[in-house]
Amino acid sequence: MKKILCISGSLRPTSTNTNILKVIPRLGTWPDTSFSLYEGLDKLPYFSPELDGEGATPAPTVADLRAQLKAADAVIVCTPEYAFGVPGVLKNALDWIVSSGEFVHKPTAVISASPMMTGGDKANASLVQTLKVMTATITEEQILTIPTVRTKIDAEGNVVDEGLKANLIKIVNSLVNTGVE
Ligand SMILES: Cc1cc2nc3c(=O)[nH]c(=O)nc-3n(C[C@H](O)[C@H](O)[C@H](O)COP(=O)(O)O)c2cc1C
Image 1 (cartoon, helix red, strand yellow):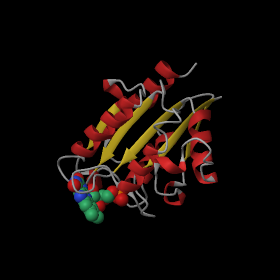
Image 2 (cartoon, protein in one colour; image 1 turned 30 degrees about the vertical axis):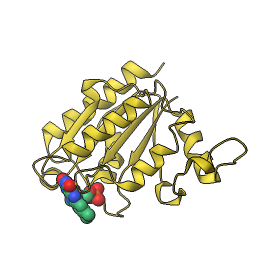
Image 3 (tube, helix red, strand yellow; image 1 turned 45 degrees about the vertical axis):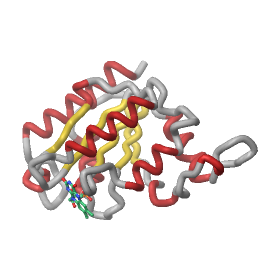
Image 4 (cartoon, helix red, strand yellow; image 1 turned 90 degrees about the horizontal axis):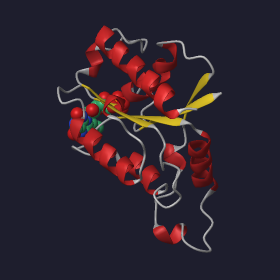
């Protein structure tokens, strides 16, 4: 079984970014592939190196995030952009992974969705940079910005834009084919 872990950068219950992650498994048929949504972003403590150094035992929520990432064959991150940057809750989670290394060589897709024309491009670029410095494996076809997202998803959370649907399918195909043995 190939495992894909999905992480949303939004804590909103009706988040468009989380909806996209929830809808992805229904867009295609990927045999022997499972998708799970990480739901602990708001339970993580604020990162500090002192909480993670020698002799320190990281919180159970941090251990859980690391375990979920370690068990995953690939990761999809889908995030909004806040004030031209990556949401603090998501960056906080990534900071916990820098020294533990679960992103090393991990096939990872980076998606940003926004109601604006820019599609959250600055948060997307920043996130790619952060994940690449953690040596995640990110190819060009695994990077996607989604502009004017509210015209592409209906009230039930279905993707109603064929171009977006195709791009999301392409991302999963790419993760399944390149990264997962
Ligand atoms: C504090 C704040 C700052 C925001 N800054 C940006 C921004 O810089 N760029 C952008 O495209 N959208 C920005 N937005 C709009 C978000 O893209 C929009 O609220 C989006 O729907 C959030 O994603 P979600 O539906 O997954 O929660 C901002 C929203 C908030 C609340």
